[in-house]
Amino acid sequence: MDKVLIPKEDYPKLLIWGKKHKDLVCKMPMPLKAVEIVFDGTWLQVKYIREENQVTAHIIYKNKKRGKMVLEIKPSGILSTLKDTTNLSHQGMREMIVMTYCTVMAFMTYAKPEQIEKREPPEIKRLDNKRPKSKCKAPITYILRHKTNATQRSSGGHHASPKGIFTVRGHYRHLRDGRTIWIKEYKKGAGDKKKRKYKLGVKNCD
Image (cartoon, rainbow, N blue to C red; front, side, top):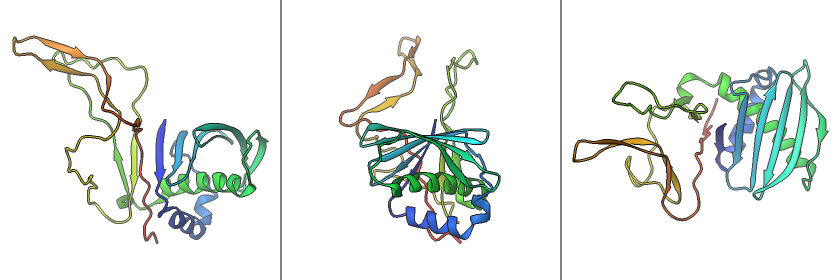
């Protein structure tokens, strides 16, 4: 499942973009059938799954499942609630969950090309020209920016090691004696596990 991270400082700008482009938001595009949206700076993350004219939102708050919302897409582009098993504390959070999904999908579909960068993990090359078997397609990283082609890097540089626990992909290792062996995927590092995050930047969007 692809993931979109909304930085706390950019969330208000995303909502402003949505209000300026209500006609696009109401078209209810579907650039991603399944996506996890993480609200940075909060304890909220939501997994959305789209099936034709329905959207199911699985809510996770403070690392605990808080039920789901089943939403129906009306011809007008408005979402109505068919089922709600959440135990959220206030209605405002439910409205934010619905509004954010609609706005993010529209932004990813209609934002200017220079605002969107798509990154896919590099393929593993084998000596026999065969690709290793994979049970599922690797997730895609979507980074949305505003009129900039500059590559964002961590403070540690392009080759800085990830912090916390991270996954090392399977790869071939060439030994000094001439043998080539396959190293299975494994966990490395210490501390909190770091999940792949997709940053959504909407600074100064027109």
